[in-house]
Length: 94
Ligand SMILES: [Zn+2]
Image 1: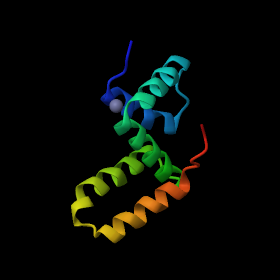
Image 2 (image 1 turned 90 degrees about the vertical axis):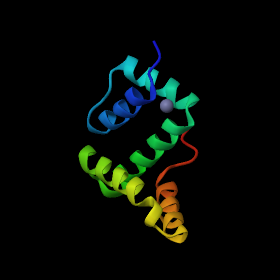
Image 3 (image 1 turned 135 degrees about the vertical axis):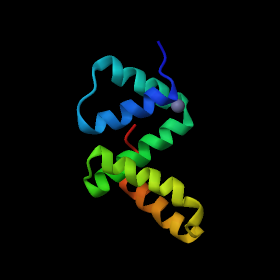
């Protein structure tokens, strides 16, 4: 079975709190490989999680703050956040 985007993002955030089962991880990886949106979401939320050491709920709060406030951020500020996130993600992990 294939995961949809909603299930995938749920597994991504659940994976921050506890280990997912083998089939969950396999299906998550398959979806993320094929879906640019979920791949970007995974990188961002994992970057934030590492950066701030937050629990899932707070990380998700920051993510939704960032999306709802994104139009109010200056391009320079957005760039800064983007760089911050990217510097937290090892680009050579796979
Ligand atoms: Zn997706």
